[in-house]
Image (cartoon, rainbow, N blue to C red):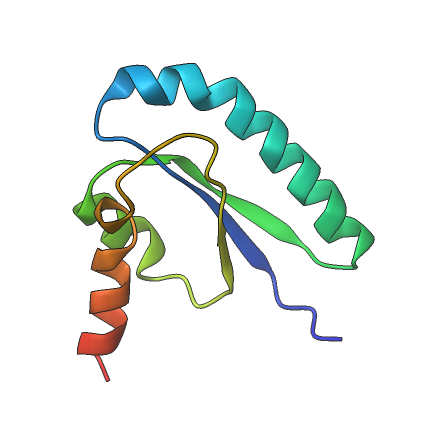
Length: 93
């Protein structure tokens, strides 16, 4: 089994209030995910904070070469936090 590290990130809403309300659930879900990954022999790390805008996703996720898991615990507009990175990867081919 590969020992690749796995990055964990939180896609968020562009408004701070929904993210603030979701933070306890995001934290708990992330802790559970980290425990599960550890049991599978994987190492994980967190991308800090909610990603709320395309430029944040590009800046924080774009340089990551490891597999990524997004932990969704509340509604968010996915293209705000994932399209920028996908577009960056496709555009660089």
